[in-house]
Length: 368
View 1 (cartoon, one colour):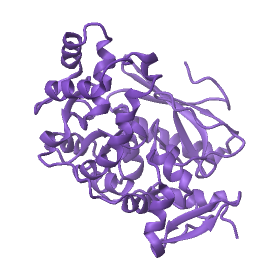
View 2 (tube, helix red, strand yellow; view 1 turned 90 degrees about the vertical axis):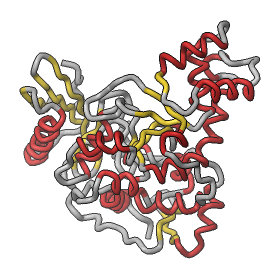
View 3 (cartoon, one colour; view 1 turned 30 degrees about the vertical axis):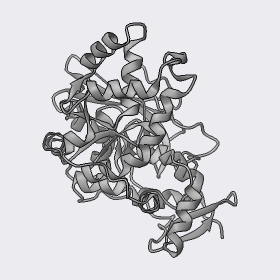
């Protein structure tokens, strides 16, 4: 029998620790999820708050300072919060894909066309040595070496070409400082590990996001040859089909979740992994609803396990307002549950402000 979206939904939520908060440490949670999406500073903190019991944001700030956590460009060419072992073993697979980006003709409207990319990379290696460097200092060096080019685009090219990560202070709790960049090896004191099998990475993906199709795996990783990786796993995976007849793969030793299991209200951060790691989002976004926006600070509300609203926080002059726009009508019970979870999140995000949760009419504009 094909797996229903509800089975896939509850299984995803269970594996994401969104059905019940976990006692895992932030580092262990990052390992299980293979990183938390961290393009902006708040989302990984919201992601951990939604998944970890009594989450203390200082643990992430401390982890970034003592280098037990790092912010690095990985899956989908986006910044993730990961542990050093994952940074060292996943980056070698992602780096070749990143290095292709600046060589595309459409990259920044052709701003790098005509340059020798090996030479550009060599300059980048000279500029970004063993010590962290701010984006402003990188731009100054780019302007000196390439006075006829946009220095920001040259820096962006270097950041694609070289295995780099972001160092503190950016990424600490409530610290949105501009990025400071470091080469991976000097910061972590270890070389990249090119021998980590893609198949093992995909098995971990299934443990956190499965069951999934090979196209889901590719959407999550942006890596090629997913069918080959699955084949290498052999009997460590089992197969199902979904309601559209597509083949789903899953770790053979994992069970599916009960589709009738209650799912608590969860407010996720923008760009949360749970919404960006499959080709289709029907397991978390009810059809025929449009996918939730991935714009900055507009974030999804899960009710009964599915996206049923959007929220955004507005903080000014000691007042923090968390405004919610339902995407469908809610029952009184659902509204009360959303209100309780939203107030808890607002107290976490803005502990020094006067917090106010505002549930609007379905479809209402979030802007105050």
